[in-house]
Image 1 (cartoon, helix red, strand yellow):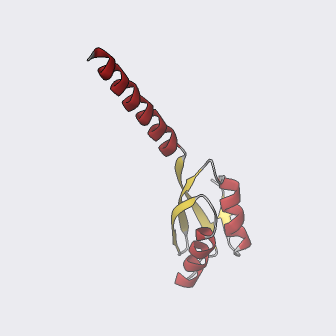
Image 2 (spheres, one colour):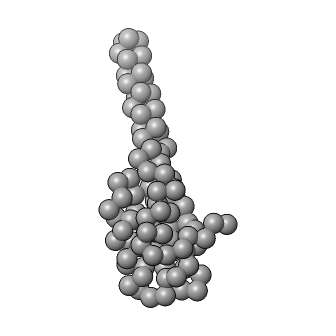
Length: 96
C-alpha cells in the first residue's frame, strides 16, 4: 500500500511540475501604440498579431493613447518580434 501511495504521489508531483512549466511561459504585456485612429487600425494590428506563432490573444484599442494588450508564449515569440509586427503594420510602439 505504501508503494502505491508513493508511486501515486510521484505521478501527481510530476504532472503538477509539467503543468507549472507549461503555463509559466505565458506572458501578458500592455503597451502604448501611436497612430491608431479608428477601428480599422485596431483590426489591422490584431489581424497581423494573429498570424504570429506564439501569440495566444490580443486586444488593440485605438485613440489618442492607443494600447495593445498581448498574451503570448515567451518560449515561442519574444516581445521584440511582437513590436516589430506592429511597426511593420504601420504604427509606432511607444516604449515607456
